[in-house]
Amino acid sequence: MNAPTIRPVILCGGSGTRLWPLSRTHYPKQFLRLIDDFSLLQNTLRRLDGLAGLGRAIAVANEHHRFLVAEQFLEIGAPCEILLEPAARNTAPAVASAAALAIREQPEPAPLLLVLPSDHVIGGVEAFQQAVRAAIPHAEQGALVTFGVTPDRPETGYGYIRRGAPVAGGFALDRFVEKPDLAKAQAYLDAREYFWNSGMFLFRADSYLETLRRFAPAMHDCATMALSRASRDLDFLRLEPEAFAASPANSIDYAVMEKTDHGVVIPLDAGWSDIGAWDALASIGQSDENCNTQRGDVLALETSNCVLFSEERLLATIGVSNLIVIATPDAVLVAERSRAQEVKTLVEQLKRSARSETEFRHIVHRPWGSYEGLAHGPRYQVKRIVVKPGATLSLQKHHHRAEHWVVVRGTARIVRGDESLLLSENESTYIPLGVVHRLENPGKIDLEIVEVQSGSYLGEDDIVRIEDSYGR
Image (cartoon, rainbow, N blue to C red; front, top):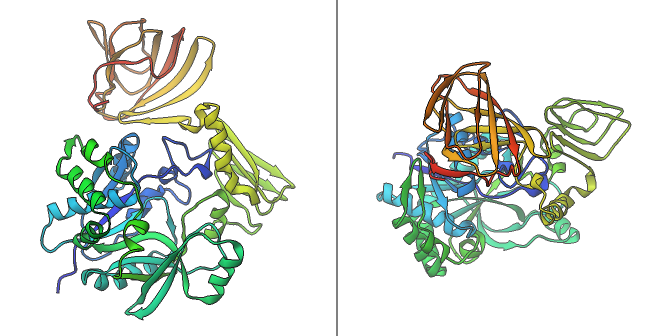
């Protein structure tokens, strides 16, 4: 018998505010390279390599992150259908739209959906794949399978799953339990009948939709209608906004798994972590002999039990312990390690103060490439702009600023009013205030320019787009 088709459904939402200042609103933790040279999102798909019957992945993302998702999957050569949510409605409607898409593409036999958050770490890839294989027969028979992480400590930050009667490779699902206090968490650990709720699932696409229709008919109808009315935009499939926004918001746990009597939990002991805060990195094997977790250019003398991350600068410590120190080009976080969860509160206060450091990283990614702020002051700022080969910025103008461009690397094709210019390295041009202009990279290597802006207002919203290849 042939192995069933498994369609990974990668949930790309989430903000990861407890990992600030690396994680930002427009570059959250799933896009970060925290463990190795691949992002958490990329590793979510990479750890499926070798599973039999693996089909094309479906990534569910929001508008702001769509180009980041596309670029990161392109980097690892993984074809992926990217489904865009027009509004945040939690996981149950998102997966329902993905299920409807999978059935539309393969009505018979209905594919299995392997639903995976994009921001988790799993060290034991083979153990994870074995758990998936153990879940497949149950899912083929119509069960809704979740993966319960075997707990190794009394964790109060996770929800729990209580197991029921044994089944092949796992247990019937008895019930979900909310995040406990420490005493209850210890009791759950001692009882050996509880698992951490991983938020990962495997089920037939039609089984999920049928169960959702039974327990949450309005959600089912809105999510499937949004898919039926979806429109194609470049590499993305946009769910119809009105129908999707009308759906009630709820998670898979609450909308389906807590209500079904066909639930199965498969134990998972594979070095799982959701990296919920900076101190979690030490629990996944990233610590040295002094229990320090380090990444970047770090020198730690007489330092112990610290989390030390640095981007583009030297971070040095002497004689400290139990600290979190995260250094980025535009922000530095120093906190007691025991208070890692409170970073979220700090970010909320920064947002109330309208601090831009919560929104963007120092390198801001765009569909055509990226830009990085180098210097700024009254009436001026300097940026490094990188344009990918073949990419083009929008045809645009500004009401409040003029721009000087110097080509550092590559070749630039520039529209400036009625002129068309071709500039190479060490050549420059000037874009006066109000003049329509466009920047393009016609070459085979990255185009790098230094841009000096001057004017009375230098905000990113002073852009009047006349034409844009990316539908912005």
